[in-house]
Length: 129
Image 1 (cartoon, rainbow, N blue to C red):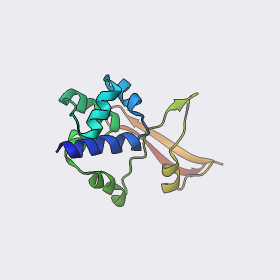
Image 2 (cartoon, one colour; image 1 turned 45 degrees about the horizontal axis):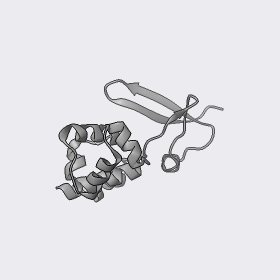
Image 3 (cartoon, rainbow, N blue to C red; image 1 turned 135 degrees about the vertical axis):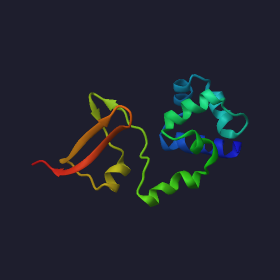
Image 4 (tube, one colour; image 1 turned 90 degrees about the vertical axis):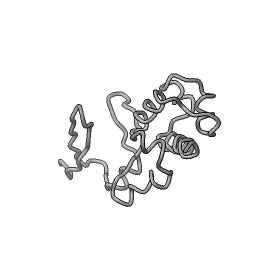
């Protein structure tokens, strides 16, 4: 099982475009701890696994027991994990793959929906003008 955890940790970190230092700071450990987890040299404790699952927006089950192929297979079903983006100067830059998959162009209108318990979503509404 530790092989799957280590593979998934590395895959998810790279997919989300975090450095080992970024993950270490967010989780509250050293960069060396993150490196050991990803190499399979050691395992994160359950509290760290919970933080990692939240960071990568996956369940604990996915984090520890599914293979990388299973993590990526949801795209075949129309489900995507496009990665993390930041708010800079009040603006959100959409990941390039999201723009491609949903055929988003400059000037397209997006409806922003939110539910504090379930999260946020964007819906393509066409063009406003």
